[in-house]
Length: 98
Image (cartoon, rainbow, N blue to C red):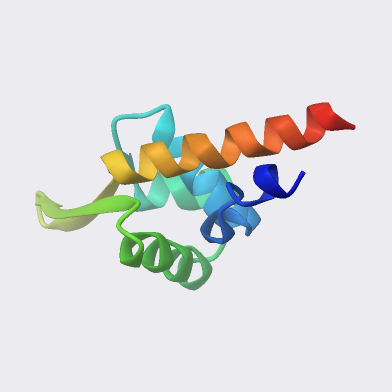
């Protein structure tokens, strides 16, 4: 059991971060507004969780303008994909042990 728990990543413990990573692993990229709507969170809450994942280098950020409106989109990095898959596999092993 201890071996399984070592692959559970604290960066993905919070439901918002888990939701962000889940959305990004199945999409090439997702913009801020879409993530906010999908997860049902406030701007500030989403921004703080995105910043945490960016700091760990699990997500990449691309800022641009569409017309005159700013647009920020996020994608999962290679490291983020690898670590998130390890996390999900550890959770599945833990659940299946019961």
